[in-house]
Image (tube, rainbow, N blue to C red; front, side, top):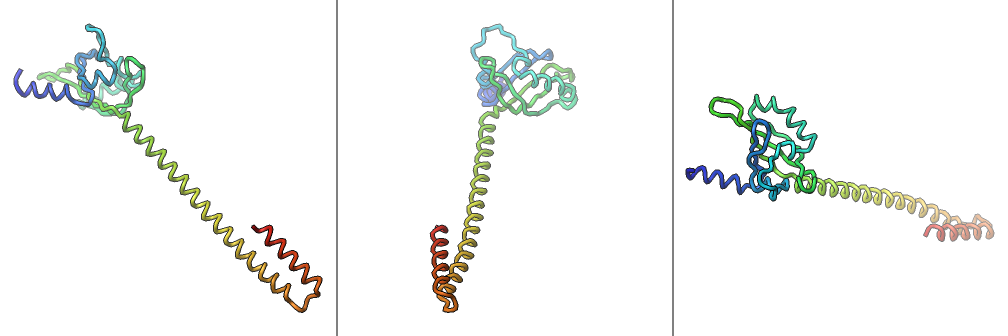
Length: 195
């Protein structure tokens, strides 16, 4: 193996992204360290044959098969999908790039997959959405508080005008003493009920 081949093999093996190879019948022939960790195949018994259908969720495998003809024509495809962790069954959101492998004559010889785990990205998106919802809720509450404050201010202005008029009326010499007393009593009642 030449130096550039060793360097390339080292890069592939040390990559944090899932990198795998499969035959034309979709049997997996190679998974790098990150791929084994992602899908839980790091301790599989030797001789275990994995198929792409073992790695993808059932829906994902259907999508993979549906896109085969397009990938054969274009040479590659990219989509978001889900892998399945083989030990836990957990679904893992991933960004998948599938590349069709051909020999020197152009004949199809296999498939290569490079996938990036989107779990943390999805969690961050969800957190951002929750924070945006909380911010919108806080903005609604702030607006409601300003609205209620405005109503209270207008109510107090109106009440002050009424009480001022009642005060002037209670001092009016044109009213009988009993009417002035009734205005004072009502004014006092209104003041106590407004607080």
